Image (cartoon, rainbow, N blue to C red; front, side, top):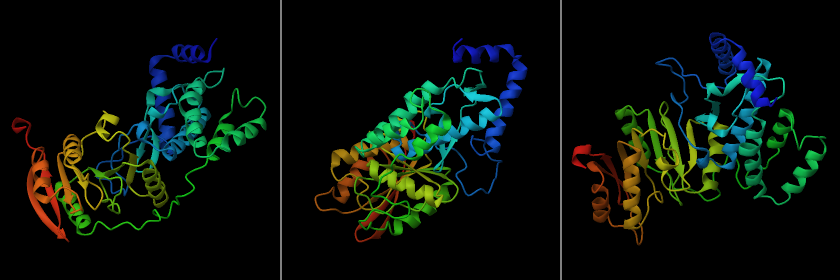
Length: 355
């Protein structure tokens, strides 16, 4: 009997009420170990975001993938001690709380069959091998090292154990030119007054979800407001990876993602619209009119309100044209001078009846 059939047989042999109770116990075991998502009590003063920030594996860098893969193995190890297992250990069962991966799919839990891990093939094909391929692309020596390392474990290439997989994933190289505690070697211009105004606007709106838009050559990122879930959308994978490593090391509340297709909402259709979107600082907005118009249309689907800073650039869109483009999609509430010719616009999405 196949492992999948064995698991289904064991589950079918147990009364439905008993299965539900046992699955709930297994789930509570994961939650108690801090491995699965369990909403905190209302009004909690926890310094982490109050809600998960939905994302798609297509937006993750290899660093996100590595942490998610190791987390799946930790979940599987914990479940096995309780007599349960994951039948679908794919990346779609992982979401992030800040930079902390958590398992979110309770229905993926089934009783442990005697024939082994029914989700082994899914994990190898959809998680492990794609991750190894991404890391091999950075270092051509890794393929030979991986072959010699697997040779130390007879039979590991065909049916690797959890410990073998975990050690292999932990050895995968990260980006050597980045440090978790250092920014890029080029000094980034601070956001200045815009950072203060952004915090005030988020607090005034009682924002629970904030999106920060990062351009290809951005200024320094904003400091996240404590409380709201905060997502940064980077245009560059290296920048997203560096930001992720720094946020993870500092236990920050922002989740940096790779905006690889320029439209975060289409990359993750389940993503909620934010209370506030912020695009502030030099280099975070497109300089051409057409690209700025595309940004305004995308931002309109992402949030109910936005803070967008005009920064004069040689050859860029002038101020009056900048306003014309934004007013085509947004209602302008106010403009604040932020120094050196820069202006921060507070925008709201007009009612649907007016659009």
